[in-house]
Structure formats: structure tokens, C-alpha cells
Length: 226
Ligand SMILES: Nc1ccn([C@@H]2O[C@H](COP(=O)(O)OP(=O)(O)OP(=O)(O)O)[C@@H](O)[C@H]2O)c(=O)n1
Ligand SMILES: C[C@](O)(CO)[C@H](O)COP(=O)(O)O
Image (cartoon, rainbow, N blue to C red; front, side, top):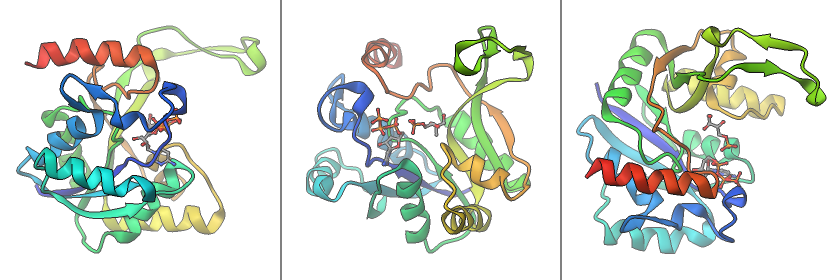
């Protein structure tokens, strides 16, 4: 089953503390961004990549794509102030149909089998998102005061990719914009429509490169990948 992937890459990497977009940081011999794009470049089911970038970073990213022979980027759009704005720009720029995935550029270790399962479930049911089951005890503690220990058997730590029938995602994104609603993932926007979203078991190494510690884990994962 073919799909198109939308990849938001227009963040600032504040929590990484590099002083510039963390996607330019190298893992091994290439930038984080290239590791992530390569997964989809190598996937014969991926028909195209829609990339959201900062306007001022477009020239250097274009050079990076050429240097590493990433050929599947069909559109590069300007991102926005929030992740959701960047994803919305990708959604608006896409003129296709069928199944689309949204995947954080900061998650370079996504596996092909998880992608394939997400696409299959989204094709059958409209919406499917990657996640892993919580491993630690989870508590609800507003203001730092424990109110409830939540049954962790029912809790998932949500990741990307998040896969959707394009028409559903477009409707959800447009409604969120119209309502001024800001979510932290695309699933929230689809949930607001009342459409069921299915979890797909991902892997604990599908880590979002967010803070310095994640880079250490990423270098270890790279050695395992070789
Ligand atoms: N306005 C934004 C914010 C984030 N992203 C992208 O969304 C993904 C997940 O966001 P996050 O990990 O939070 O990246 P940053 O926003 O760069 O990190 P921070 O919050 O630490 O600044 C990243 O690939 C990031 O580039 C984006 O395209 N546009
Ligand atoms: C979309 C996401 O990766 C799912 O866990 C997460 O919500 C992104 O959060 P961020 O703060 O924008 O990195």
C-alpha cells in the first residue's frame, strides 16, 4: 500500500540546546534529518515526502538533500511557529489522496515494519498512530500533588508516524485551524472529530531526539543498526 509522508522539520531545538535546529546535528556521519529521510527514501511504498522547513534553512537543506541523494522530496513548504502549523502547511500543500503519514524529522529510528502496519490499519480504519506501552508507574499529579495512580496497562506513550486517510486528516486540520485549537499531535485533531484512532505497537528505540541524552542513545542505536 502506497503512502506519502509529511515531515515537520522547522523546529528550533530549544530543549537540545545546540543553539540551532537540532536536525542539523550529526548522528554518526550524517545529520539527524538525513537519517530520518533515508528511511522513507529506502521504502518502496513511500511515493513522496512533503517537508516543512524554516524559510531561512531551505537552501542548506536543499544542499543536504543533494549531497545525500534524497530524491523523494516532492514539496518543501515553509513551517510555522508551532509544530501543528508546520504540519498544516504540509497538509495544505498535498494535492493527492489515499494514505498519508505525519512523522517527526527528529525520530530517525522508525522501523519499516511499524510503518507498514500503520499504513495497513489506516487504510482499513482511517487513523492509526505509533506508540509503546508505559513501562513505569504513571501518576496524575496536577501541581505536583499525586491525585491518582493511573492503570499503566491502559496507557500508551505516543510517537509518530501517525497515519490517516488524507481526507480525514485534512478535515481535522482545517477544523482545528478554524477553531483555533492547538494540539501536540495530529491524532488529537482527528479525535476531536469523534473518529476512532487505533494504536499500533512501535518500538522503544523510536526515540524523538529532544535533549542531549537522546543523542547518546542515538549513537548507541546507530552502532546496533550497522
Ligand atoms: N514549529 C515547529 C516545531 C517543531 N517542528 C518539528 O516537529 C518535530 C517534533 O518537534 P520537537 O521535537 O519539539 O522539535 P523542536 O520544536 O525543534 O524542539 P524544541 O521543542 O525543543 O524547540 C521536529 O522534527 C521539529 O523539527 C516543526 O516542524 N515546526
Ligand atoms: C507528535 C509527538 O511526537 C507525539 O509524541 C509529540 O507530541 C511531539 O511533541 P513536541 O513537543 O512537538 O516534540
